[in-house]
Amino acid sequence: MTTQIVVNHQAVTNLAAKLEKLGYSGDDVHEVAEHIALNLLADGYRPVERIPDLRPTRVATEAERKAALAPIYGAIDAARRNAQEAGR
Image (cartoon, rainbow, N blue to C red; front, side):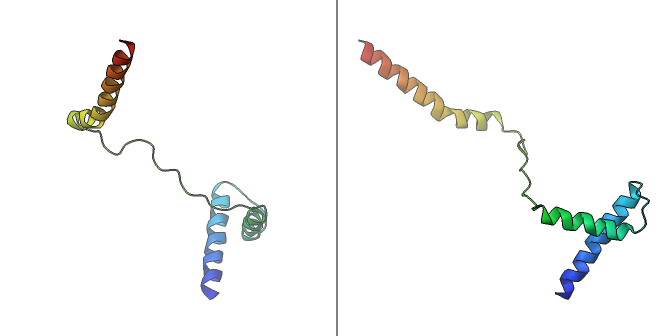
């Protein structure tokens, strides 16, 4: 429990510093920071997972692209052949 007290204190201190940096000039910035934090939690605030980056981390080579598309082109060719044979 003592560890959580230290973590909570540090979180409130960090929020208070951010409020002061943004220009808050109230009486007790630590009290305001704790009030904000408690209200967020009481209103149901919970951290959510970050959305993974949707951009690829690297660009595929031409050979990799062709290899990935080969099964698709094969399925298209087979479907065309089946359609032609069914139309005869």
